[in-house]
Length: 139
Image (cartoon, helix red, strand yellow):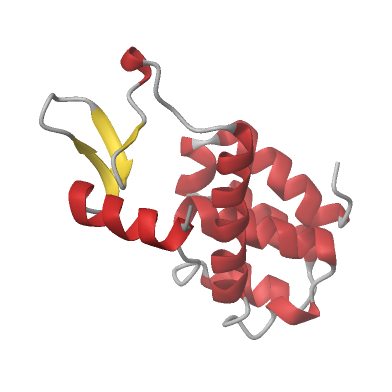
């Protein structure tokens, strides 16, 4: 069987929608007719989830590289930045935080993280991330 030919045929028959949608029966679907509706036994595998996550991490790391201070951070602190970007989308409004990172002032970076709307909305997560930022240690 030729995978490309079968793929082309299924795309032509099913269409391809790159976000979740409800099919003609009302079941949640994504991509080329991939059933993800839990009520009908749909979903993705752990391997598929990790594939998507790896793509997201790569996308946010590329975004992080746009910040001039990012490359100078150690691996654990870079990880925090990627995780923050994953959740927040950008750090453009985090001026004091960015100044602290540029100066490698980890205590001030932690304070900036914990004195934010983000920390009020997701306090446990913010505390974990702030600790890694302060110490440079993953856990």
